[in-house]
Image (cartoon, rainbow, N blue to C red; front, side, top):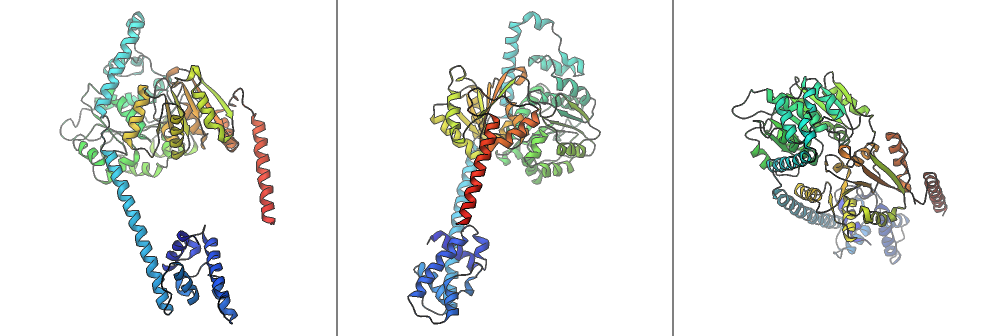
Length: 566
């Protein structure tokens, strides 16, 4: 008899619960085993009462310990090597005490494990990551070097070219800052959104990833905040709030806004989960002009009284559709209640669903919609292809692709559905000779920062990530994106492959599709409005895959019917 099943059932019975409720998966085996034991015990004795025999042979699935017969109680005690002498109340008490003891031991083990996990998390949080100030400094130096290099290559053109941001009402001081960063021409989303936002209008922007949405809201936000010279003394109130769904995206936004405001009296601060909240509270004591945050950590700080949004005049919701997908809507509602009704709100997203439109109606006042491309459209410069493949052959094919001569040094991101699955895949790639790192929700923030830094620096050329990491990764020169597993949500496909072909460059998106993924592929193709080309050398066509899936499904149904007949 399985001791773990037995003890779990005894504990449930002793607490007056039912075995059927506590252990539904094990109920049958437990009842059957005890029934067999009691039947064997009954056969070795003489019992002339048919009623008693029936009661002893099977323990009811919903019996409590007090309702068991004396022989049944003795049999349970005998299985644990305990004394079986005494009357029924004594036997009941003995079993109850045993169950309580086992429960205490289990709770003690759980408490010990929780303490170890808490200590591990505390240590990981104490590892200092690069400060926002340092990140801004490095980014500025990198931008200056890039601008200098471009100027040397095109010196005559650089001297005569006017900055296009002047034409869309960006203040001269910010235009000069953009010149230093080597940014001359606004992107389509920036051309349409910035003039409206600078006028103080609420804006709802829809554009593909990698089209410059951060500057589309960042420039008007910083422009208007620099014009407001009030509250220059004492603790600074939070005048601008930018909400992002992921830690990586929040950090990226903070760095870009920090570059814009580096030579101004404005200061920017970022708060995300996975970092020591006490340290964040201490740094916020002096206040900040502009706060970039993830919704969960912002609410934690608000609940502790460390943050007030009473004087916040500007709100930005970036990647708002992902916030909905991640279940942040209740958090957004709570945050909105703390904001002044008189404010400017900007909302940006790569897709626009019915739910997204409802959110826009709730948080924006008479918004002007700026849509650069149809919602769900992928970048034209991404070469997409799908490989129909058996599930157990994906890793060997992925390794072969990553090791291909001309592509072996390409910077690539591999996406999958689960944290555990991507961690296992990362280890298998490393074992296969690939320089890879992984980022997902089970990694601490310092671990994620370290992995991203290694990928950006070129120390490794493969990043393995979950869907959450698909947003906020602005990494230049990602040549390839692999969908090791197709996403359940079609919109996630758009965001995944948007990590390549950024800033007008070309890229490749390769997707593996198994029989189980067929419905997901159909949904993706419906959203993006095209049939993804099938890779050459793929053993099946889409029609053949569907036919094979139907055949397997039919065979399973036949086998199930045969099993039931037995």
